[in-house]
Image 1 (cartoon, rainbow, N blue to C red):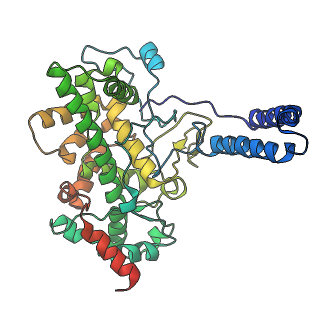
Image 2 (image 1 turned 180 degrees about the vertical axis):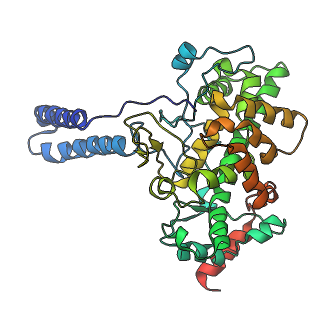
Image 3 (image 1 turned 90 degrees about the vertical axis):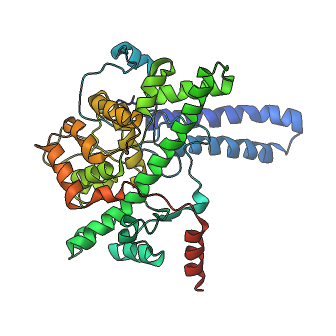
Length: 395
């Protein structure tokens, strides 16, 4: 995944900006006295200062220079800088940029949102920040969330999203309990990230169908496609290249990679940086963790687990090293086959430096029956929310 690194604003630069703002505000006092009369400069200047400082602090907290990758509140999918991609990665005849294979990166660029298509309805989401494994399991039990029911097709997955894994997860005495806690935590996040991609893909295909039917796209529709192409590193919104890139990742594969890369959620990177997939970063300004065994490596840290899942999927959907994965997935889609994480794992040998990486992924998928979760769906009905409200009100 090739992201562009946005420059981080230094403290000195921000301090200078604040001083300039105060100095200019002070100069404005004479004008305030002339326009509003002596004695009014205090209230008026106070209002000006309040507005200015609010904008300044908002820039610190939510601007594109923010160090952490955005999480549940906005998409963590960042655009590939088209100028840089054009300069260093010329497109092939298929529309896929030609890049040197490399292990994934997670360098942060400015967030560009596709309107109304990547924002979940958080009125229907239970966000959980567990203080302990006991707290996590209690949250799952109170809404009757059981993996056995999901595997057997008797229940959908509740829209419960865990922001971070509890630090005592590895202290569970039962290996099976530890595995269930991890899968129940990550499964809803994978399903939400796939749902966001599905919504974008559906809208994209509708626009392509409209254009192929001879209709002219409206200015806003074409702008949306151009923005989508920028996000996914595709020049001129090439339809075939975009179709290969804007697509879901099989649930079993995402879970297996999270298991390998995070040690079932017990690694330091997962617990301290919400890093489930071991994505490296070379941007000095980005938030990262450094392995104790190799100080030259930096692992991207995230604001929450959801941001990590989104970034991982965008990585598979854009990096040149996973072109084979995207082509095999596209062939399965063309045949109208169900995507199989076990089969697609064959294309991810370049993801990690671990020996026999594909065999490890496939072994985890088999041993933990992760294929049974491919058909899992988020609970969109009102019954889940009724159960949740009933529990909270003690009825």
